[in-house]
Image 1: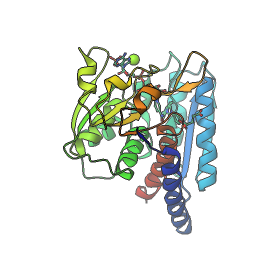
Image 2: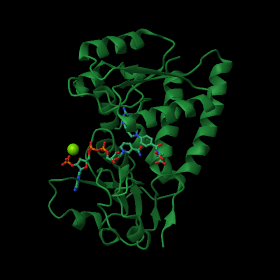
Image 3: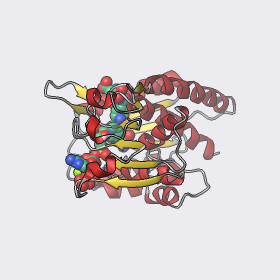
Length: 283
Ligand SMILES: NC(=O)C1=CN([C@@H]2O[C@H](COP(=O)(O)OP(=O)(O)OC[C@H]3O[C@@H](n4cnc5c(N)ncnc54)[C@H](OP(=O)(O)O)[C@@H]3O)[C@@H](O)[C@H]2O)C=CC1
Ligand SMILES: Nc1nc(=O)c2c([nH]1)NC[C@@H]1CN(c3ccc(C(=O)N[C@@H](CCC(=O)O)C(=O)O)cc3)C=[N+]21
Ligand SMILES: [Mg+2]
């Protein structure tokens, strides 16, 4: 039977540390500030944005939500970003994905100042991550939060066989880079992989980020493995669930994150942590 990784509890611990850092910065006259830009009315996005806003408030981070209509042009969004890039009271900018079709996400990613890129999506920051630069720079919050979880849980990273399911810019790719930098042997599998479960069954650490509910079953998992479920999916009844079939995984895995209460809270806590880091690095 797996040990359940309590992401909520580890997130709370991180938030306590972050709050102390906010208090320190404030005593020195710096008030960390995050701006979240949301284009259109995607309901799931609204929930995440509200959660982020509430958490920032509790920790003492200033946060602003900029809501733009769904028909906002790319030019108009670029000009909003430019305003925030120039505003020295703002330390962190997040443009919530997904964006409407008329907007080129990659162009938006490149427009955010790398120094305010709290998602770590800018090619300059991705390059630093991929080259394992010994510098201060932001990293995508979900995989960075997963590394914090793995370390908090004392999961051996050096020489571990790590398999990442999914290759998105937000989760799979930065996750693979972080695990590689930590000394794991990393395999990334995706929709074009032949015999995907031959790989997952070798994984000491299995991170699943596909958006496919219950894609990974207990029989796809190496006994005793640490399984990190990033998925935020909905089952047939519309209930929030993960990419891992929890019930069958539970009897095989060594450690397992639940959905909700696993990776999600760590993502938000890491966003807060990184907002404060950006404020500090900007001094
Ligand atoms: N908890 C959190 O903090 C966060 C949760 N999420 C959740 O994580 C999940 C993934 O998000 P994201 O990475 O943005 O999703 P994307 O849709 O951008 O990427 C999904 C990846 O999974 C791969 N994939 C899809 N189906 C399969 C399959 N059947 N077998 C193997 N690989 C497959 C895709 O492969 P290919 O490239 O070949 O198409 C793709 O690389 C979603 O449920 C999302 O809601 C996302 C961000 C943060
Ligand atoms: N630019 C950008 N950056 C992101 O980081 C980003 C994004 N766009 N688009 C959407 C995804 C998704 N995401 C989540 C954040 C928190 C929870 C979260 O708090 N989940 C809780 C609660 C879920 C609930 O109960 O609704 C949990 O899993 O326990 C989930 C998912 C960030 N994302
Ligand atoms: Mg896809």
